[in-house]
Image (cartoon, rainbow, N blue to C red; front, side, top):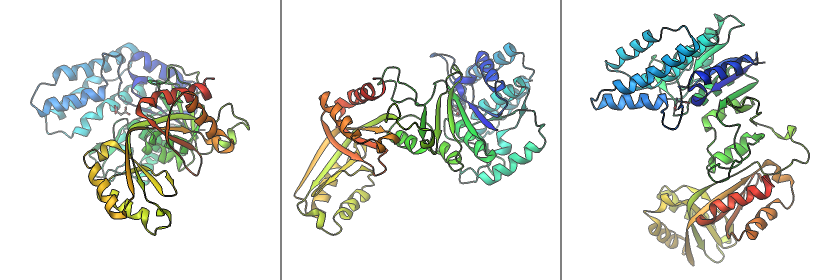
Amino acid sequence: MIKVAKFGGSSVANATQFQKVASIVKGDDARKFIVVSACGKEGEEDHKVTDLLYLCRAHMKYGVSYEEIFSMIEKKYYDIAETLKVNVDLKSHFDAIREKMDKNMNVDYLVSRGEYLSGILMAEYLDGVFIDAADVIAFDFDGQINMEESKERLLKKLEGVPGEKRVVIPGFYGSLPNGVIKVMSRGGSDITGAVLAGILDADVYENWTDVSGVLVANPTIVKNPKPIDRISYNELREMSYMGANVLHEEVIFPVKEKNIPINIRNTNAPEDKGTMIMENCDKYDEKDPPHFITGITGKQNYTVITVIKSHASSEEGFLRRILDVFDKYKIHIESIPASVDCFGFVVAHKQVESCLYEVCNAIKEKIKADEIRIATNISLVAVVGRGMAYKPGMSALVFAEFGKQNINIRMINQGSDEITIMVGVDDKDYEKAIRCIYERFISA
Ligand code: ASP
């Protein structure tokens, strides 16, 4: 059994966190491949190392001394090394970075050093082997990760690693074909973990963070929401698309392809099982699950342009002509709830704020609409759950709850896979709508 375990910034923020990581890693022999982020914040007042590195770069750009900021970074790593009595010559690493900073340096090199140093320290602390991500994560010149090349490089590197040793690889960066370091998007260590899990055909990709899994609802709206036990990739995609702050699309791709489950875990509560994200949850699901809703999420500030024209449904190319107008203005349509002669086009308000009346006029003209109505300040609330498809009356229960809470439903949409029921409500009812569904179906 092989597990790739990625530890995020908060999991390696200081020596105490390093100790937690070590006990988690050593608690399971399958945790062979460890990916680490740069040190995260220790508290509210503190700063993430990656942010500090970007800040150093900004100071350099404007010719202002970066000394104070850089020494904050140095102190973090020296403190960890000293407390844990890790035998690493940090000074030589910092000297090498400083030397490059004084020359014409690649920014990505500088901002990747947080992960690099975490990796060096963690490898030594775990008595493992450090493999530099620059040697194994291969980018093409277009910025895409080359999985084949990365696999080849990693397997080659692993040839020299004794079987009993754990391997520590820094997250967030790799290198271009000419050897120049390139970083991923922010939060990219998650991607490194997923790429390695994919390459190694891991049994599980563990993603250790500071929450006990993906939460059912946004914790700023619902107090102490429960974590989700199991969620399918498709449900997760719906949740992230509809605004939930979960894993990046790029993280899902390398593992989904190979059907490798992702387990989101909490470094500060390792006994919690966390959330399992997997392709096919159904086979693990009970016949009659405790609740049919996996997650509740949503987005605010939408505008609905409703186009009404009698007998439109039988008019050839009617919809296409309207879509051409949206296309011309480069407006992305979120959803099109429709009835016989009435079509609603739901779009993010910021996309139309500068051209709303032009767009409406253009549509009116193009299809000779009877009427065009505009509704602004609309929120979309998405109730996501693979179990809903099998549960007759589920949407009725959701809508009834809104009715009971006096929340006016402005629009309803359900995809044909029945994973998501999407409801449009007034912005002012947004949080109330999420809370009432949580209370009625999850915490009740
Ligand atoms: N350290 C990087 C960041 O702060 C990458 C990561 O933590 O995943 O974005």
